[in-house]
Length: 468
Image (cartoon, rainbow, N blue to C red):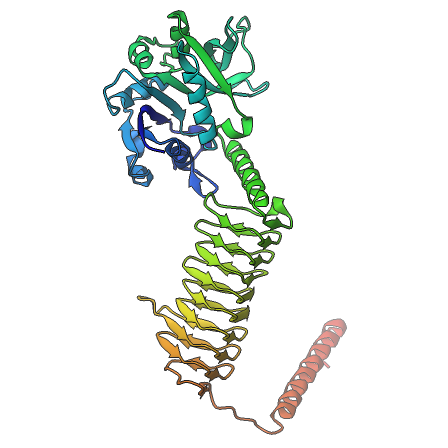
């Protein structure tokens, strides 16, 4: 979809989020590995607006480098309400009296492009429409503003902020989660909004009342509470994470993936899993994960920044950034792979660390093997060829190359390259001392007996009160 001047987006993200009790601004807390603000930006980007402007708090300017560089940043020096926040963004938009402007909230992360497009469809379906409110049914929640329905079907008169609600207000449970305002109406009415008598703040929601009083239609589009809930507390963040994970699980299941226990598997916003993959219970996928068809991820695995082809991983395995597990490979229990390629039919089955390495085809890595890739200053690579056998409890000290067909004896510390089809053994010389164990046990047995006799004599002296 091409960008169009018919749509622009303003994201209100200048709040501090004090109820989270965090030094991190609310909008930079994460759901599914992505900040609240970036979730909103991602949804807004999908409708291809001409501009996206995020209004931020200058107090947290040091965090702003995390915001997508395609997003225009504006700042609100003094918090004076949402209408004032919108004013801070207006000079960043193209001068225009045509088109539409979305006003979205940076702490409603699960908003979808489908809902944004539906709002636009409602807006352009009637030429008298000036405002479309994105709404959801919040039930009996008293902390959110409510909509007052108009006389004409499908319209509203105003949005009443929670702080301004009184018992006589004839409102419905529908709550505001975003606005779409015709640009000429926004230009005209934004600066006519007056401060609330209750709080002294300027609310952008007042534009609905002003537009209605000016003879325009103000309409609404309803989506789900799961999509449009916000976050002001840690408990609400946890609820949003649950909504996100439930949505991802359903999406993954619908794509043809087997989740043995869906409620125990956790995804990142960018997790990619092809059909005919099996994921066992208690698996966590971090960012930048790609799982190809035919893979099986065992229980209690953590996968982040890795690609798994038609391979077996786990149980209890960890795949870290830069790892690629190719067809037919096996990564077993308590194995960690970092920034390494494990080629076809290679096995790393037990208790191993493989870092900054390349393991050739049909190679076997014995239990307890590690690659020593870091010297305290730099990291080095380990190259292992095809058909190599690494004996258990070996240490491969990088940089080192083990060529095709080589065998490494168990317990070896390999510091030099190993030629093709060679046997490398690097461990201390073994010396067997005959009857050493017999003498050792007799010595300790005599010592134990002597200690027991001394203790017995001491107890007799204490009991009789005299020396024996």
